[in-house]
Image (cartoon, rainbow, N blue to C red; front, top):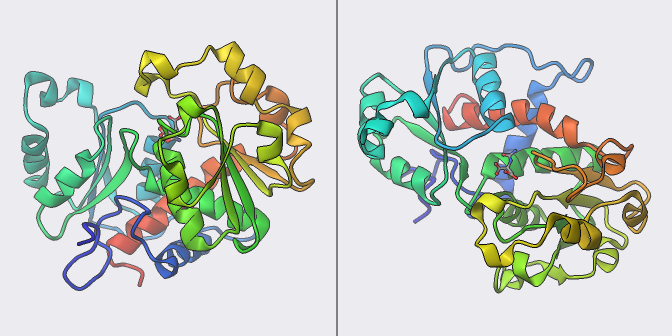
Length: 316
Ligand code: NCD
């Protein structure tokens, strides 16, 4: 059974892009669009989640995700509590589920969870009362579905469609929860090809089974693509063996202006952040005219608003 849906088949938790339907993904993107007012792109405040209490539980560091979730919840008029995990009773040995039970007793309606352990948001989703929703804000190297959705939003914003697009994801795919969630979403939405580019040591075994073509040569991999997504080397999740030196990685796989020249002329360059300049991407590309890295962050607010209001049943 899909752990994200309730007995009636309605989406209750947002844990992974893997089992979502095309209709649901497009619905969320459309709701997000309705939150972005065409004229000034300002997301205005709406009362959809007034009276709801949302706990932001970040057991791992974050800049963009935590902040845009907070902004999104506030724009929906919810009460947001940012739990500071370092100063919480977790540091006194309280278990994760005991913490959740206590926060539930404070009338929580939604938990936004980031955790270094893959599966932690699933454990919480199983444990909570039926009126509570859990959103996965990144679990280990497993999934980061809200990032993938804001990336899909960005692609549709600039390209207008998914059909016919060639998308290349480049870098440390093996340790990336973002890449996995993107690959599922891109295939569900029907792009014509998803490519992954990187050295063997940074690609998961049997990645082809997820519906991607594999390239080790960056110039061939970038040939004629519409979208390039660069990823950081996630050294915090690497075993020593797969870590190439930064210089060597940059020499072979770094995104330079010259290499971007192999892609289509109107290519867009994306990155979930944080970017490591001079490693996976040069400043000339990150700040260049093809880059949509900062718009991705802005779209993240509307997309997270859309996901939260959809789960709360406020928009059908
Ligand atoms: C990513 C993450 O934390 O998974 N960043 C993000 O959420 N914007 C990618 C990364 O850490 O490299």
